[in-house]
Length: 148
Image (cartoon, rainbow, N blue to C red; front, side, top):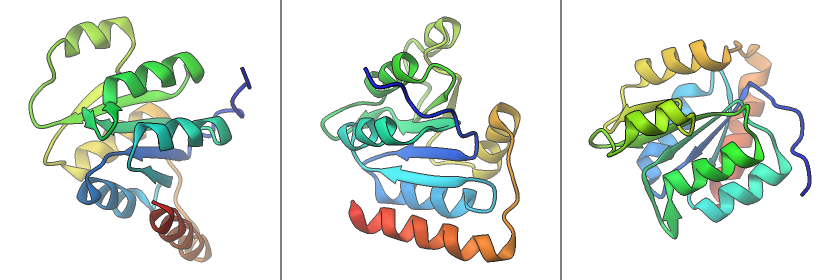
């Protein structure tokens, strides 16, 4: 196994097959984090081998996999990464998954961006981008978006 790169708390990975969730979180968190997006669990695991993340947010259901399966991989591969699940209703077994450390939190869909920001701030901290970095971060998001 290749060891992941040292954790980068300013990197946040959003995994969802729903464009509106990826774009809402990417645009909403851009001021505080380097946001990476993937639409599949396979794309996310590939990215996790190359980059490190302070947090991974995923929808419960994913095309070609499940959010929980992805979070199990993240716990095994990068155990210090905070793991969150997004779903319309409180997922079955969430309390047990939180006690076991598989999941650190749940965000109801539709998302309340203020709640997501507050939870991430408490979990991994944040940073404020210098104005010149904002355009670099926006370009990075756009490039990641085009690759999907």
